[in-house]
Image 1 (spheres, one colour):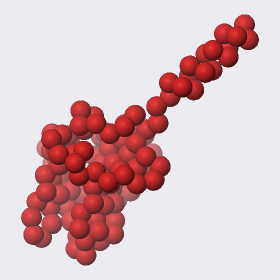
Image 2 (image 1 turned 60 degrees about the vertical axis):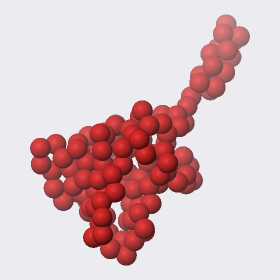
Image 3 (image 1 turned 180 degrees about the vertical axis):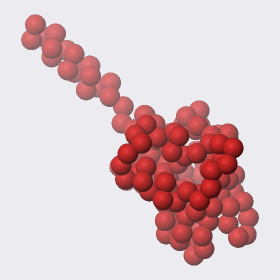
Image 4 (image 1 turned 135 degrees about the horizontal axis):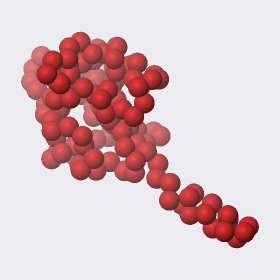
Length: 129
């Protein structure tokens, strides 16, 4: 019986994948806007806590399942998270638009991995300068 418990404990420990979170961070001096085809908070597993509250505080509009969020200078917002390592197939949106005064940056499955910057604690960032 002890051997079975030990084997199960080893299997559970080895098979646990860490999760990751992807953020958009505004390092510019101006406000930027994030437009998503679905609300960011719809993709969060937990509807309570600091991540959820932070997202809701940045939301300025929701219309026809589209969300619009405002990021001030030096601010960030969690876009989504998942288990394992970031992959294009885990990206839950068709596209995400980052709108600033000069142009619009489109984030999709095609370019997600190429624009990510790894941070600490399995946090990844899309940095807008």
